[in-house]
Length: 311
Length: 320
Image 1 (tube, each protein chain N blue to C red):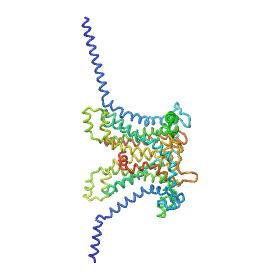
Image 2: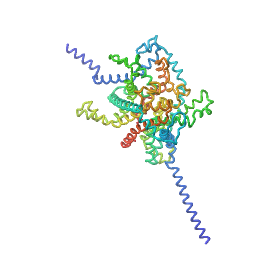
Image 3: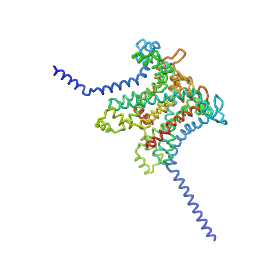
Image 4: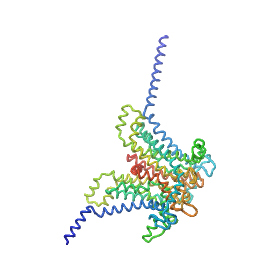
């Protein structure tokens, strides 16, 4: 009999060779934290599919039953946010492309070309401070500059007024785009710099000996080599600009403005005198986050890389 | 005589020609130098950034010395520090500064500890590590406007998940948002949720750069896992810790979007009012431009007090 138990225990031990308690504890821990990080997002997702009645009547993290299910919040949210989405796309793409390009050329001029080590270092330090300063320190001059000095409301209207759906208010969107380029350059520069410093010197030295100019080294060697880094920086910067709120709020002003970006519209969505419509809010939050979520799902690794070298 | 004069002028003109040629040659060489050729590459972005950042800061400082408010243009002839005096004497500014520090210290400390803990767990040969890391980092890819909506719902007094979970332990329900004693903690908790994945990524990068044999050596010496981490591994993560801490502190100083979005207005509950929200409210709701510029300068000085030593540390480490 004891023999039999022994052999059964042995066979179980054979089936589960590495069953050890610390491993189980670690996996439990990992799963608990995964639940912790997912739960607000998951709860939001299921709530977005619930009718207003079901939102208050059901457990928050359980999917709605058949009678509490609705897609109406999503259609309302998409209707509400579609202009904001268009505005955000119109702003984010040019702003990202410009700041990434300028960041790359700046990093090139400061790392792969040696012209004066000390000056280069001083310029680099000035860029570094530009990454960290709180934007609050430039907000008052920024709005003064765009609204009072440039008179941005009258600037773009006459030039681009002929385009469909382009109203004069969209000139505020132009101001936000340019602002994002200006303040996005330092971080893009830093990300590229880390990559260029680690780049092998050999190719560039060889090209220099062959008499290649600074421009052709950049175009023929550095640009092709930094393709993967362009991907990383683009993904990182696009996410940052899409998610940004402070510049939109202070330069565009109101979530009701036709130039409002999606984050600005979302901040005013689904609340009125009767209270907050959480189903609509959650649906809106997902619609607004959709581009960054898609990018994240597709390029999570690049995003993590951008974050990790951001220091 | 004439001929000798000729030779003199001749030789003179040759000399002049030589210096001119020398000058031209030098100009040509200069124009082909790496400095000139690389100038457009770094100077265009540098000047755009410099105007925005340093021009902006300078202008902000100038405005903070005026009495600029409302819709009248500022008067730059009468400059004084009255706004700073007013700010430092204002009890609400002092309260807000206190809140800023509480949020900064609590948020940074807990996020760092949690991030380090998660990094160590994930570094212990977990399967599907990349997938798990992706989940942990997901909140970081979302806008604060979006996550604020999620947490507003999580903290809802009647239907929120937080109250449902603590209800299992017989606690609550608490009014996380409405109770002035709880709201700051609730905000800090939500921000920790969003940022601990980031801290984890930074620490993981640090852990993976350490050689494996140290762990083996400590094990052979008979050290327990805990002791090995505490005595051997964690002290070597100093550089990662400093980086993560600086990013988190700077973020805490300028955190505005999450608070604004959670409460849907410039005026956030007093218990969560920090310098960053006060500054934006004073400027863009109340049009007290000079006063808010002074607050912004205070905020800038606080950030510089963190950034400057950090950059110096990086420089000393040779990693700048």
